[in-house]
Length: 142
Image (cartoon, rainbow, N blue to C red; front, side):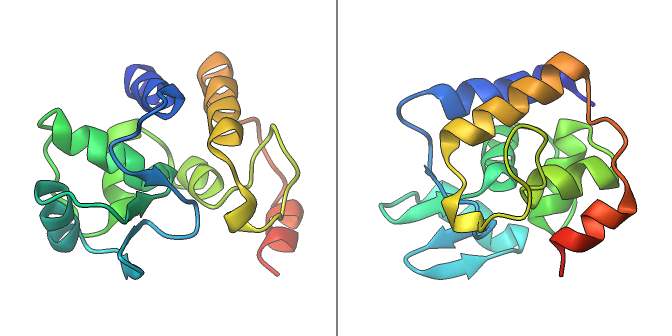
């Protein structure tokens, strides 16, 4: 896990004005259009206008691009995972809201920025997630 980048993401979310709005339902949404592929995301960031929102992974990608990080994967989640230094399982838990600090299996639309900050604080303090049983993960994806 890349603790400095996790801290950058946490600090960005804690600011009152994010580069783009927070919404866990989609990697990026721009004027009601969901975006997953990096080519489109770079266009959105370069010509930022009102109406853009991003989930926790999307926010990480915005930070990575803004600091000049090498973005070489096609998908948002792969780039966010790489920049944050997460394993596949850690990324899956963080990006899909299967969090230690709040109730599992809730609707993505109900996840707040404050909950995301609390989860990032947990990850930074513990340097990752404790082991989670596959049964609980399976229940969340039903």
